[in-house]
Figure 1 (cartoon, rainbow, N blue to C red):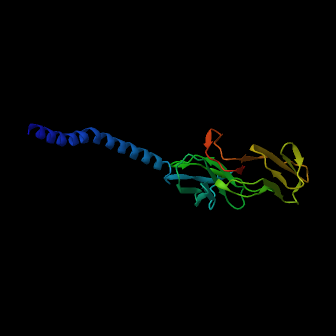
Figure 2: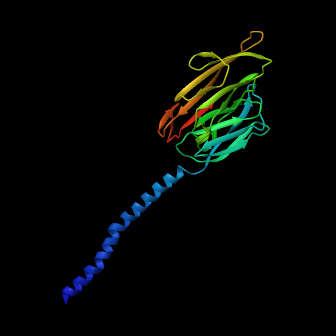
Figure 3: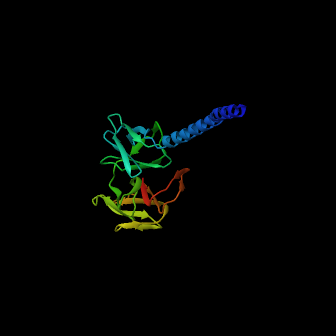
Length: 234
């Protein structure tokens, strides 16, 4: 009889001991999993913003400039107001570098690579198109970069421009469109001469061609899982 009573007590006590010992452990595991999940989802929420001002080379405000931020084969955009202020929202916070462009008719387009988080700021300066400026032809892909070799030509006023010279693997007199398809960071310089022999200041173009999916480092920032692409900026 006593043995039966002892057996019943054991069967009652064991489940209670099990709950006391293992329940806090499992609760701790659940908290750990939830914490990791929250940390992961935080890196992909769309709370990043980019704001700033768009001005010309004389520090005057430019109204109606289009600021566009490319990421993950998408983009967000906003136009500058009468004070030159713009505010792009709904940008994902993640590890990739965003390509931000600023453009307006009559001005040369400006580009910049940025890591964007909450309340990121950047001011754009746009320069008016002069009597001679470059034009690009290629296929645009991921993040607003070109995914094909880029054909470069110059648009100019033939009544003002007598000669155009550019430096791509050596100085050459521009006579026809040329193609850039090298991998890496490439700088192209150019200037033009009018009919009185006056030379314009030398201007530069930065071209970056990235091939293959890989992690690369550019200007101290990581480009993660980059698709084939070329970025051209002034």
